[in-house]
Amino acid sequence: MAELQEVQITEEKPLLPGQTPEMAKTHSVETPYGSVTFTVYGTPKPKRPAIFTYHDVGLNYKSCFQPLFRFGDMQEIIQNFVRVHVDAPGMEEGAPVFPLGYQYPSLDQLADMIPCILQYLNFSTIIGVGVGAGAYILSRYALTHPDTVEGLVLINIDPNAKGWMDWAAHKLTGLTSSIPEMILGHLFSQEELSGNSELIQKYRNIITHAPNLENIELYWNSYNNRRDLNFERGGDVTLKCPVMLVVGDQAPHEDAVTSFLKMADSGGQPQLTQPGKLTEAIKYFLQGMGYMASSCMTRLSRSRTASLTSAASFDGNRSRSRTLSQSSESGTLPSGPPGHTMEVSC
Ligand code: BEZ
Image 1 (cartoon, rainbow, N blue to C red):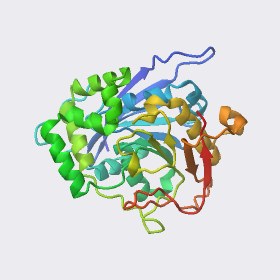
Image 2: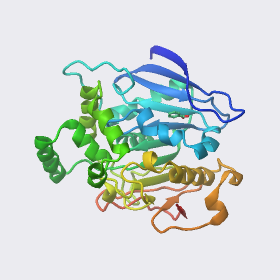
Image 3: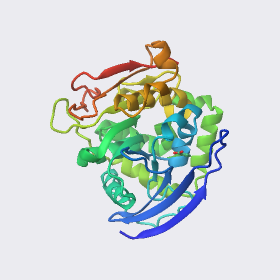
Image 4: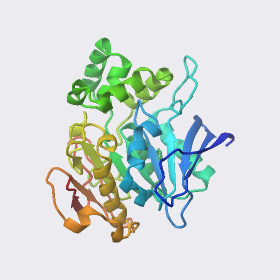
């Protein structure tokens, strides 16, 4: 496993009084499926897993996760964890376009690259945070390496392969839409796209003018060729760790993830549009795993106010004796033994 390059940069994040700049270090490692780039923020904390993110199609780690990780209340969380943000191959800033005919890794192979990253960093366990394709990749990794995943935050996951109806619709859309428009339709709802807010304009611009659009199309194809994760309610294929599922209330695939945590007013990408709500939910999730003192809990723990539109369930047992399972046919969510249920007021 050869290291290709290592770049040290200091992030230009505005600092709070008394704060010192946090170093971000970008690395690339060689894997059996090609090289992969990832950026590490912060320093490893003893006896704590790394927060490990994987972004969706059309994005990279920054365009997917910066609004969440830079959000004010998120600082309480991140100061307690080292973060590893992966860029899918060819998605890193300045990535050269892959040569014609390049065999892009499947989502399963992208998941198989993760052990090389953790081995390189000498990290033993992670809490995964993934969006869309990234959520699928982290779930696949957790299924094959359950002992290394302490928890998963899965945003807008669709665990199922495309059925023939989906394929037909996809092919038809492909006749009239460009790749950027198809990817935007994966990330955002039609309502958001036609509303053309500043956020939509920004992401439309990023994707349409991406210098690595050919690479993005390869990741998109791998996503569309994914196989079923095959979660089964009470079956053999189950995630062994606590899982928090999140879906935007207007996410294009909202019906694929029913309602563990359906975020009101969050459109298709809750981590971009509702970082505050998501931060609060993640704090509860981490607290359930024994990683956040309740003194860090803000608004919600004090008021215990409930909102019926935003609810989350999670398994708060760090012994990992609980199993969450998911039925792909019915689109139901991890059920398993009853976990805590939380509601987020916004
Ligand atoms: C972080 O602090 O983990 C972070 C900063 C900028 C972009 C993404 C993540």
